[in-house]
Length: 160
Figure 1 (cartoon, rainbow, N blue to C red):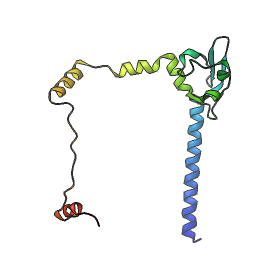
Figure 2: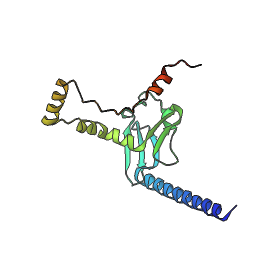
Figure 3: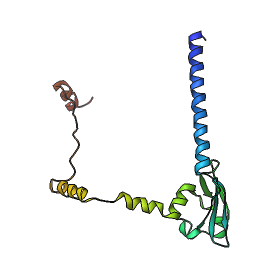
């Protein structure tokens, strides 16, 4: 290999190595922030116990987890964390849940954010009404490329 090619290959390798290190670091940050230490089904309380990496333990009633309403005890006992510890798998049910998604659902945060996003001010309501009277939201302008007469003939001629 020529010296220039060796230098380019080395530069690419170093760049890839740096990207891999950065990705691994992002994964570690995500695991420590969003991950769990353990998960188990608590039959006595009919709930899934999640011990988070930050020391908090949450107990989420089975009835509050979509898709587990009709699950049996045996189905629920076979639960494990993903290798990144950011999701939970119920093996017998082939059901996966993100740890953060379950927590948000259990605390009702998804619904609160959905409701917060639908707030309309009087000005927004008036603008929507006016747009409706005008035929709806204005369409985006689309720029068309000019077509020469030669291109038009090619398109209209049959192939073959």
